[in-house]
Amino acid sequence: MSDPPPVVELELEARAENVAVVRQALSGIGEALGWDAAVVEDLRIAVSEACTNVVLHAYPDGGGPMEVAVWLGGPGLEVAVRDRGRGIGPRLSPGAPGLGLGLSLMAALSDEMRVSGDAGASTEVRMAFRAAGPS
Image (cartoon, rainbow, N blue to C red; front, side, top):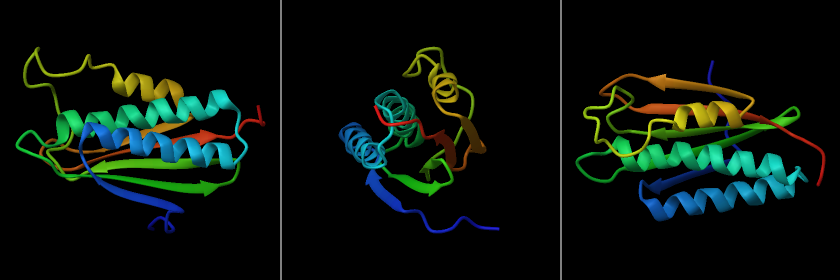
């Protein structure tokens, strides 16, 4: 079974400045839904971390796409961040960029999180966030 069409879909070059574009788009969605500022901030941070992982790790030999899709449903929303790069896998060296805490942070800030993909293939990080009352 496939997902229904997302209400928002972005495909951007996997570059650091585009993480800010995604973060602003999610802020607008959360605010338009009347969500509590703390929940919007959790959404922004978690999705920014997923996008940063794409920028830092997915395309070691050059740029590629960073895809973000948002679905609304029930009391919340679901966000998927995808790459078409080398996929998830162990760090190749201790000096690899990042501290390795991103997945834990995303899991802590979202209500649900799933990661799919294999080494050498694309990765999808999917997170669900439940609404909270207006601030």
